[in-house]
Length: 205
Image (cartoon, rainbow, N blue to C red):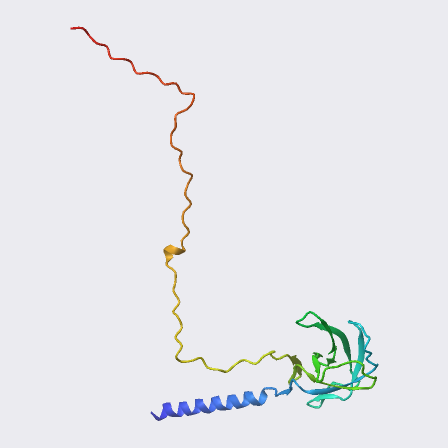
């Protein structure tokens, strides 16, 4: 069967060449991982007496670069937003969050490494980490937010035997037919008059 064997070899070689060509033609993917450290500088002092909803501007200290492209140049603005969080005991505690940081692919969520506690002077350094990854595939840039939790890789216990499911019978799934109204028993009308039966006539002998 030399002819069949040669055809199989040629087919396998063709598939390998096709896979190699597709891999060479596919655009390479590069990723700026979540957790990348970025640094911001405060543009105004953070006073302890600020109210919830107040905003203080900050700017990016260094360029954020991926594959030679600047995703966010130094000086890109972000905001420190004063808010609060309710503790389990019901008390309200102040909370300052870092928001509105925009790169060329869109809005990038970031989180301060250390808790921001006023007062903080103007020109202070605030280190933060990115909460999403940036994917670069070909000419496309996209922000990918990962799961907020990690899936478990644990295998189920082999000794566990699940309870088999029981399918209901067709009769139990049928709806009962509605019963019609009961027919009332015939009752004597109060206006009806009773007619006495005639007495038997006795013939003398």
